[in-house]
Amino acid sequence: MATVTLNAENHDTTVEDGIVLIDFWAGWCVPCQRFAPIFEESSETHEDVTFAKVDTEDQQQLAMRYGVTSIPTLVAYREGIPVFSQAGALPQSALEDLIGQVKGLDMDEVKKAYAEAQENEKA
Picture 1 (tube, rainbow, N blue to C red):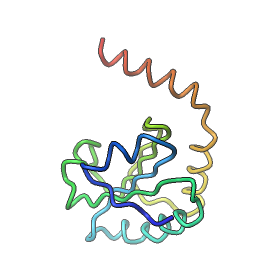
Picture 2: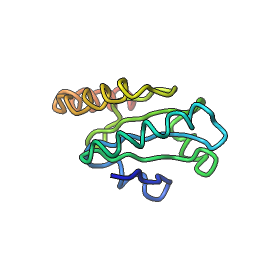
Picture 3: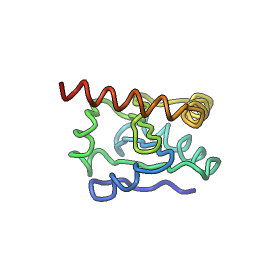
């Protein structure tokens, strides 16, 4: 599967289902340029995962929404819930390991913890 260009308009519908990995990047960023082919290669291997890219120069408000202060930043969603966020380029093996961990999550536990965190934020 090719990567999807993520923007403010398609963000919510893109992350609501399944597993979604988001790469925040910029054209001038050398680590981003090194990570891009790794991200692309994994997108070809994992057809059950949506791989999305956010150009932080073009989508500054979306980057601010995530609090991105360093790029590349990788964010993972599963079933509409953010389950991972980390700045820095990953090697292929670490990206593959992350994908495996996200696929292996007990979503009943994740949903319960997420709901509790949302309630605590309101309090």
